[in-house]
Image (cartoon, rainbow, N blue to C red; front, side):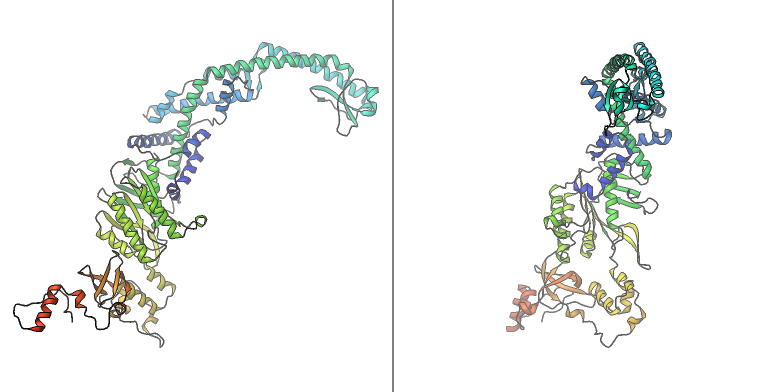
Length: 638
């Protein structure tokens, strides 16, 4: 899993899948889940998840075994080790699970579910199960595991009864020598606790001494012979038990190929039903996935958000669309929208169901590339902008036509004008490559780029301007605003500052009517100007003829020909061509006062060579054939 998948929180989806798996082998398989790059494989994996989900809904949870220690058990058996009763019982339980899973899957065969066919690959282990259960009861061998074992254990019981009877008689008759009145065992032999000072009088063999040394545990001489007989019987019992356990171990080795095949089938089923359980938990559905370069998500929900609180996302990118630029206010849901599209696409390409409505379509991708979140890295001394740029450069080095690129707040974290220029350059590169990209931004120039570029469409997160709250609903085909002025007004920014801010952004009028037209309701106090409040400067003072300026949209440098008019338009000459640009899309580079002397003749810059020659000749003589040509809508250069 790469860092771009982590940016989409796909690792959390993997963790949820692993929670639904039972065996560690299935969890390990799910840990490596990655988008399938072959369309046929991807479609097949989606169908398998659908089949498992259908069977889960119809029949319920499958009785799958855990199998965590089973591989170790059969490996030990194959290496010649003797399996103990507990391990053999584990093999028996697995055999029983195979029987139950087969019965479970047979219920789905009538419906034609693909997953049900796995039941045919699970072979019966009934003979092995019966052989083990005949000999093993829980964690011990049954008395009737063999006739020899049964006879040995009966003899042991008889001898033990004789020993205890004699010991009880000694407890009553010689209690003055004992430190306590009970029968115990030490080192596999029955003994009595005798006071050390009476050791000689008591008679017998000391088997063990207490920690303090005041008590000795002695085997009375009266039970020495039956005790020896009991020890001999224990040796016989152990030998017979080992013979039986080795026989059962050999049976496990004989059935190992079948056990391993069944384990493989169980692991596959565990993985498939983990996907099915996640689908049910998320209320997800299967989607169509293929090679068409389009995306259609109907009522999609981010799988890590509460389904009851998450506002569904409708997202549509047709074949002729390569990019979507999403705008809108902060906390409006732009980032969530981008991550939802990316995460749902990634999940679908992994063969998982996604939380949306039927009829959705996901395009196959050869990679998912994201720059989402704060790229600042203190350990590498990277600023937020540097972190973003490092990530974006990496993306541009690897993204292809068949990639999905997700960029959040492209160009942020640096000078707005330069950041905007970088943003447009990156978008143009992605558009030329033909990959699918989703971008969020606040830059007005990027919005303009989306409106003018083929294959790029605008979208916005809806915002309730009346109540100043985000609606978290994506609207395709329209661009949005940051709503900063609305929010600033609601928070109490002074009216005259709101007016000035509005004029700087939109140009033109600066009175309350202009604010109202922009959707900003000025408070009554804004109608009264305080004595200390100065009138705003005229827009015509913002730029002067001859100023060198940068056009923020294109990054080109031009010379101001006509200053800002009442509509906020400036006429700029770039490479000999005059064009009209909004004043707020220009940035002063060098003022005319710094570039030219006071009496400089600007006709040298703005007039054509033909006009200048004709103007010169007219000053010398009258010639009816001479004429001066002016640009349409342009005034005469004085």
